[in-house]
Length: 139
Image 1: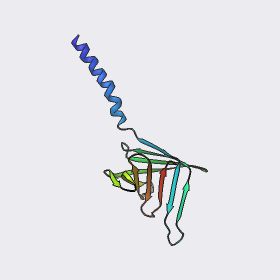
Image 2: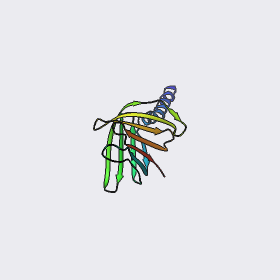
Image 3: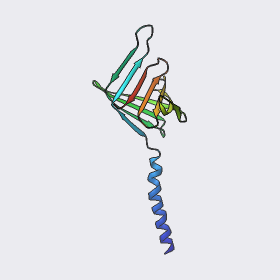
Image 4: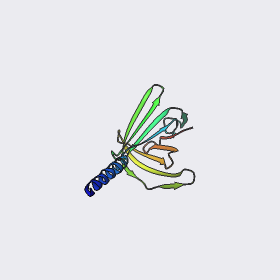
């Protein structure tokens, strides 16, 4: 009788803890409906600052070390993949609040920096070699 109780307890523990452990490796999915696009001026063009109202899905998968960004523009979706190189500790800034900095390598080998709000209110992406910045949020 004691073996049956122990077996039942082990099975219940296994059923309780396994989904929790599996959930730790699940990717984070963020969905935003507004993109603020900024490109600094260079010798060939003036600066551009515009707001687009397109749906964007951003998946951050720490288990696979990838960030997948998919924006649904009017002429079709555009998908970008980034490999995570480094993740910072929690940062604090008066104007931004609490956020994390994730340094990535894009599929075209350019360095890209993501800033992710702790409360998931916004995500910012900056391409380091040209200064183009996208800020994703919900309006």
